[in-house]
Length: 109
Length: 116
Image (cartoon, rainbow over all chains, first blue to last red; front, side):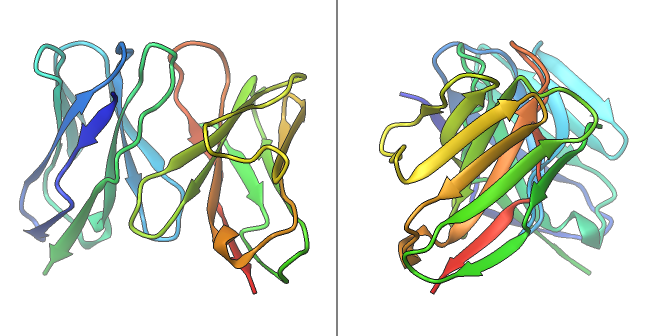
């Protein structure tokens, strides 16, 4: 079956760095997306990885290891506005996004 | 990025009535639109996939006669919740993609439906 595993909740301090891990099992693989979702709002796109390695985009970086079925999202210089849920969504062989419950990130001053 | 507009953002309706939610792609042609629902603290659940001009493909367990989806043009898809019940209260989100294969999904703002 298809499965996504992320921590349910994480807490970090403003200005610090946090890494959100994601392991996945899918039927086929066409890359992996990370989305940010604030409470009561729709998800917004953060990153897309299809090859192994690290993709850096400003304060956010995303890493992928296809052989391990593993990805992480790294957030640097955390700001209060980064408090949100972070959704790891691999795309399967049918080009469908598979959604987990996401990781709720709480930023404390 | 591309803009997807979803309307209304919030709706309260009486049990037994129908509610229509619109999803529009404002600056691109959406060949495929997806409808999700999301309960509090849970993941997005795909309800159906619709391609312009053809019938929607519903996920297992989703009643197609209750959740009517129309994708009549490349910029508009609608979801109608018929004979709504309190258990249909949820956050409904549409997303649209511009082509086949790997494309970024652009999300609408979501619709908070409350059935009383």
